[in-house]
Length: 171
Image (tube, rainbow, N blue to C red; front, side):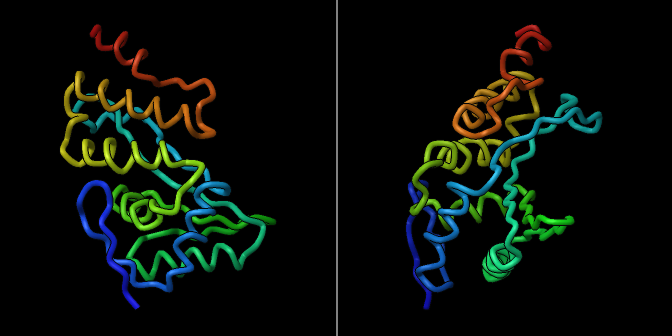
């Protein structure tokens, strides 16, 4: 069974899994994931910094991570399952995979609707368009990063913010 749904950005997303799986995965994103954005110094980047979007899902239950890994495989999303002593995790770190994953479950997101919308509608498309290649563009992107952080667990003291880059770039 395949279900096609239009998102707010007017692109159609094919949902080729059983319909009950999408709300289940959305609940994991809402309540069981570390979802966010990292900013790293990178000498190979045009302005010396790089913005990376990611989703990390942790569980003590191997079956949950296996289910999510299968969901990713069914949608051509590159998730990386990992295992430590008493914990399992799935990492999604490629920008296009994060976009696809969030787009698939977005209609079912409740608690993190705002940061998911910002990431899917604003941040990732602007990263794809190369907006971070100038100092002004990078600061504009950091405004979205800061807003995502406000709505997720990553809102704690951050080394890099839009204000810190305004200061660094004298903007």
